[in-house]
Length: 215
Image (tube, rainbow, N blue to C red; front, side, top):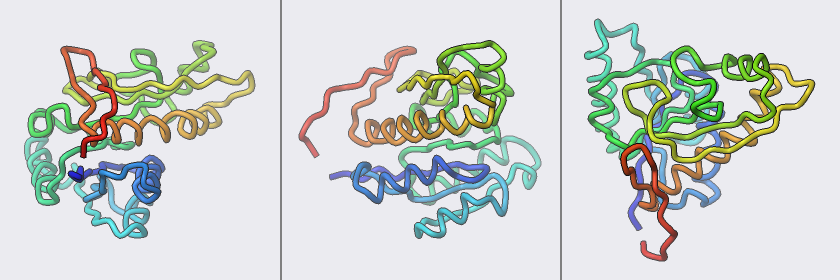
């Protein structure tokens, strides 16, 4: 059985990283291992999660590099050093450029806390998607996984999970529910489908093949 080496990019607490680590540990992601965790900021709690799981972790801060090209080069170098097959951006708040996307075409998965194309794009991170969902008065929001391209939140959609908006929701309570009911479900599932070779991109669509017994 071929193992998919995952590089997880983080910028904060690493709750989605923990969801991935837990699914690797319980056998849900039987074909996967987290090969490295790369943080965009030093001292974030995601680095502690990696340490606790025995996963190598490094910090690559954009501020340390003279321009985006140099940052991209450092990021690709680190990913290749750990033989990463699949890159997962799990709350990674630093923009990378064409060199990274070109190095991992249809091999970078992002999770977004809304049902794309709603409440997405530049500036829609953290509490913002949830604030906008509440301001707009939607009854359903959710989470989306997609392959990353050069436009923010615009790559081919893999999975989506709808989450109900409660009448008394705050941005914080909605963020937590979307994370628990949506992100923690569809991100590991998207990784599993990738590791089983079941995702195929056709234009703007991601086709999901039926499961087989082949290893």
